[in-house]
Length: 296
Ligand code: UTP
Image (cartoon, protein in one colour):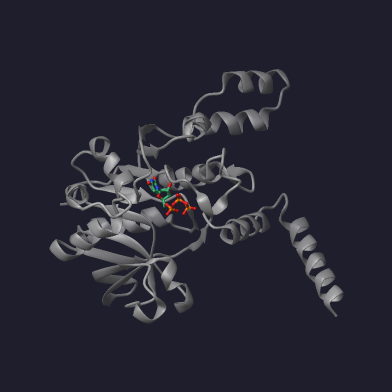
């Protein structure tokens, strides 16, 4: 029997250089998806997946993320006095949402290093890693889908997305056998391969369920030239020495760490909202036809 997955590690210590200057002062994890910070969208996924504990790996300038999940007595007091009940409830709900601990990654030495920082807090049990850049809308939360696969096969699982061939060089790409619907036994992983060298078009996306053995692999992973520890290297060992499953999750994913992905995610989520969706749809139609007219 595999141990129950209870904890989610969410690394938020990256610099977010692709979204500069927006991320100079504001952590990218607090940029909104319509009106909800990305980190809150992700934490709602964690809770909907049945996990009980969140471990945030934070870095310099990321204190506002912890504040977002803390009580804000002054704000709550003002909203109470002004009888703004809806806003008050939404603010209170956030602080009640989650039991989170924060760990500081003192230098941004890569995703593998960020995960390793959570070793003590995770302990000797399997855990989830969630990258909050990847916002995934799904009927069954993506994290829950992966946990179910983990429990069924008692092996590490990574989420996979088939990507267009011209985009493989942006991702970690896997090579393996497709042995059941949506499931792949991973043999090798290649970080950002050239299009002609990619072993497949299956990209690893930011949801993982990993056994605690990964911490040993991370500790033994040599640092790269820039001092970074890559998670991919530890996953490669897991695939070689134990087992690593790739699972093609069911859901719609946006990469909000990228300008275009961020905008698309916002438009998609806004269009689905009852309060602003219809007007936004109308506005987009008008915008497109005005553009077409000006070009003709
Ligand atoms: P990214 O590769 O997207 O890097 O990190 P980044 O710094 O966040 O963004 P860009 O590329 O400069 O725009 C993937 C995930 O790993 C975390 C990031 O916070 C993000 O969730 N990370 C990365 C860390 O926590 N620490 C690191 O040292 C590096």
